[in-house]
Figure 1 (cartoon, rainbow, N blue to C red):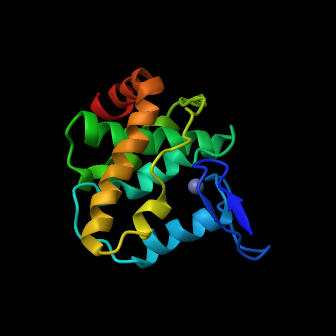
Figure 2 (cartoon, rainbow, N blue to C red):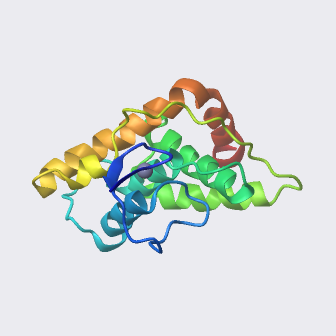
Length: 173
Ligand SMILES: [Zn+2]
């Protein structure tokens, strides 16, 4: 039996009923399982590529979840990292620093600084499954780059101004 991911719409064989999902990152258990193997275990193997360090950012933005504070913060912080690397030309290796810095600075304000962004239509976007089903580590690296760019383009089309403002407020200044 197939299940459809609520956020990226990938269709994958349904896992057992108790298969875990993340507590605020959205999506199906089968999609989360593929991402977890790829991100945590490096399975299947991916060659070095331009945007490998942004895999988690693209996944967390694509899997926006529901409008609750930790999900709102996740999309914001990971989206800022995508903005910094892709639009501002910051080294993707700095993504960890950008995430920590923007989280820290947003937490330092009295009221929640990030707001829920209505997710764009992500039907037809590149998915994690498109990466893991490529035949070689090099082909997977190439698809990973496409994945990161595709997720960003889809969100940028409707929310570029917001990410630019957050970047200016929490990272640049
Ligand atoms: Zn998904």
